[in-house]
Length: 176
Image (tube, rainbow, N blue to C red; front, side):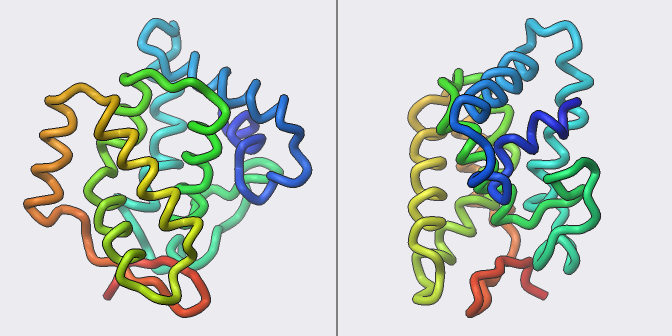
């Protein structure tokens, strides 16, 4: 069920999904990620790896293209750009709490910051992706609990963001 709901906010489905469905999907996922939800742990174990693994465990396969579909409309492994755009769509269609922002962005803050630096220095990088990264990190820094932001910033200072490259055709992948 979780991947089917996520498919409604997946970037490749943007044209065929009505805005009201995106809002409903984002709201449902938001409620399911809440620690008050009875099955919060199960939802987190399904949803968070889909969104975090493209940044935390990049592989040559997931860096360039998506792999087979777990449900119609969403692949089993997302590329970093697909994960970023999915997060952006989620936050665009819901009113995220500090806890949600922390849950979704703190584990990958170092990677997002490293990608933002790369996008800012690359002349071939997509400007809308650059703006999305900047907006996500700016919102994260303003809204999330100070201790989580400090931990995320310390990860950035420690160089935990990994090495990334943006190819001339817009693909983002882990640098070798």
